[in-house]
Length: 338
Ligand code: NAD
Ligand code: DAU
Image (cartoon, rainbow, N blue to C red; front, side, top):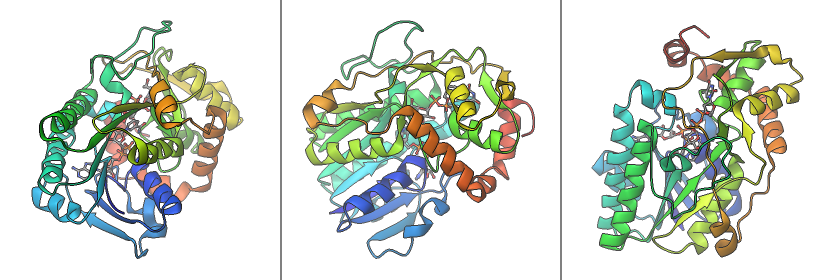
């Protein structure tokens, strides 16, 4: 099989490419990536020269590049997106452009080239926010209710994918996944930001009051789920992908990281909250478990330990990432220099 991966130089995309080349060594992969601030060629340095891997530097909004990349492919796995909620609040334009328009260009190209399979990687955030303390879980039938520009742009993309399946019969599937954690995650997101700040002897900024709840899944479990959906998922269907952990607040997650790194809680710093901050996410992923037999394999403690180890052992990777543009972003977001 020849697979087009969009956004393969980012966090989940690069983990997915590593996963796929390990598990399906006879397949060939094309990675179409614009290399925004979040895309990093270093994530795939070890496979750059592989015969069955091709990199195309380009924008998914560019119809010609999209067609060039997709021609000859059997399937598409679409990761490329602007993905950070705080940046979407500071500057939404690129989110609408890449996440909505870019997805549209890819869908239109897939329709034109009669691509056999289009998998769209989406997020739990399109469903909005659950009350703290409630026991409610979202299912694949829950109505969309996005609340940040990021979530709204991903919701727009999901709706387009569904429409292309219904209207044109495009062989599409969607996965909505919980928060991922693991290697190569850009250190603007809570967990890698916490770990790298701590490795530099700096404090962890926790949005006040730190009682919001996220679900954390090790990235390889997400990659396995996408693989199964491609192999066995039903066309036109959506699958939730989530972890099997107790719920933890952001503050509890940061305390777990401090415990893993043997550092004191005085390293926590409460900062101004995110506007419109979603309180709690909770996915009921029974469907993928019963229909496709997927279950997560890595529990939270092991995921955090592996992630702390990776950032501790790959300091050149994140020190390079945290220079330049990142410093300006940090100043704008947190009102102070790093
Ligand atoms: P990321 O920000 O780390 O990587 C995004 C990648 O897309 C980068 O390599 C970037 O260069 C590329 N890209 C951005 N705009 C592009 C464009 N116009 N054309 C081509 N390439 C472009 O993101 P991530 O965290 O790896 O997320 C990947 C996907 O998974 C996204 O669609 C995101 O919505 C979804 N998702 C992420 C999480 C999470 O916890 N990170 C959870 C659920 C779903
Ligand atoms: O739920 C899936 C989503 O998870 C993905 O779709 C997004 O692409 C991904 O970025 C992530 O979004 P979140 O907003 O949940 O992740 P983030 O790491 O930015 O924040 C996690 C929680 O931690 C959230 O409640 C906000 C809080 N937070 C975040 C940062 C960056 C802090 O308290 N302090 C911080 O400095």
